[in-house]
Image (cartoon, rainbow, N blue to C red; front, side, top):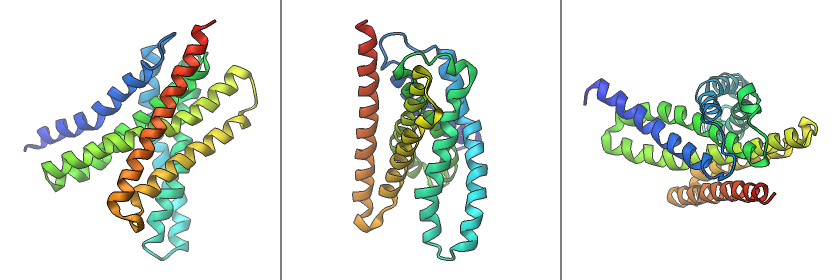
Length: 238
């Protein structure tokens, strides 16, 4: 396989699933669907600025941990379950403050949609970064691992960030203080941390943790889509 073919395969498998999920989430809303322009801007923020900002913040926060903890097992655990969820769930929903995105939030379900889209953009680039390591292990291993990431990782980022998006949308719609976003932000961190904990928790068995993590994200994305449909239906009744 040539380098060009590898890159085409890598980019295609990394970005196609999140794009399809974006269409799926956006079309969950039947009435007053969001403009594709603002959806695209939100996705691109997640795929670019949010990833870069998260990388910088994670590096800065990891430095004190490297100086404090010498145990090679504790450090990766803290990064996966504490640092990454906090940082990533902070940078992704900042997309909702972009002018073209913010003016599109005029219904309660809109925050859920834009939050999910920002998360999917983030997961696309994350798939690309992880995929570079996967592809060196051989085509079969690459396909298996990228499928897992395209399912678990994408749905995790979408459902977690949707929660913060919902909280932000409520503050805009109800003209409340931004502190009201905090409980939703903490829920997003908890969802992200729980997934990372399950996927890496070998004490209950590697496969048991894996299937628990996959089941968890299915429940979360199902909840998000049901919430979008429920809020959308309320608007349609007026």
